[in-house]
Image 1 (cartoon, rainbow, N blue to C red):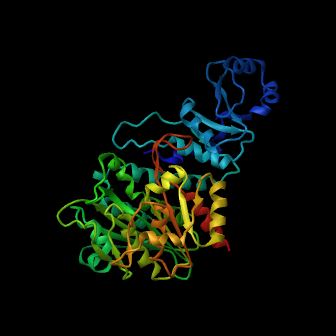
Image 2: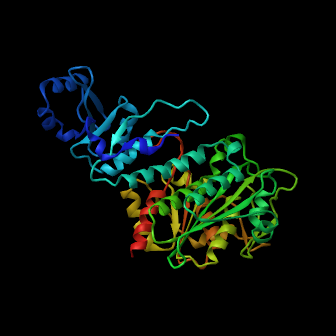
Image 3: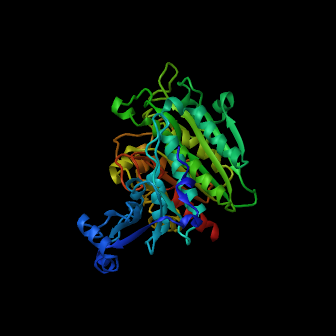
Length: 460
């Protein structure tokens, strides 16, 4: 895999780097007049006008590279600049003059450069960019590494990313940061986390709960929970074949949890981080849990199974109950939870749920600033009636299929009572069609926005 540090070079590397001049369409006429006649004529021949995303390379008198120009248009996606990483000839480039949102432009360069090549020959080497002097290079590299981590884990096929491999990925991060790691499985899992055990028992790959902590006990407690369903057949309520095609990404919530924790620890934020990942495979065999079963949760609530394909909220509920027991100041969960969220908002705009209006306002503001979009959805209590049960405390799916993302969020909320602030993200973890900074495939959503919000939250 590509190391982002080899693509965003230190500022000292600017010597002899090819300049990239970014120009807005409205300013192009004035900018054009300042160019040497030869370059001006070359760009006119190419039809360059400064429109958004337009670019051109100007050769020097010896046939080498003199400079590149990039059209800003009237603004647009700051990751659009990153397209040059794949479009320009392989060389070292630097930003010449002012570039709006230069930090995001540099990050877009790294995100565009990502390529998952575990099972094929590496693609062409992207162009390299010199980090502008007024940007914190380590901050940009850490953000890119978080995206790369999520993408690598999600893109890996389930045959090579089961509960054991997800544990190994978690262990690597915990060991890198000298965090305390605990793995709970077997009889203890069945006894203390019965819903995690029930969902995972039909698989030949044993379920487990991954639990690691980092930081000082005296610091504010932040618990991050990630759904780690490494493959989801739907269980006895089996999915159609088309519904299974992307189910390798059903552990995307776990990947997000690891990426956010990694960002926080690398930044040495003054917080005590706990990561909880229920790692399972929802398979089918003679001992699979059934529609109509009633499961007892760690919290003691009983859950009627309305649909075995609504398994993610079951494993999350047990993990959330554990995290809630130590009364964290902030608890966040990531989950590839519902198709209803995609129907409502599409694949690129994940919903989040919280009752903390102040935190929600900060997160919404920073999601826009970080070009990491999120949209707040309501925890609408009347929807509880849709997941009522006649024989248990709650139903995991209910009837009717309406308000699916909201009812899933409300289900999870029943297992969180003591955390000061609780935030649930229903992420897709996938880019179905490539766009600037987002190649097709696994994707991190909301990680950078939450990291920025946590920094601000700690600042208070």
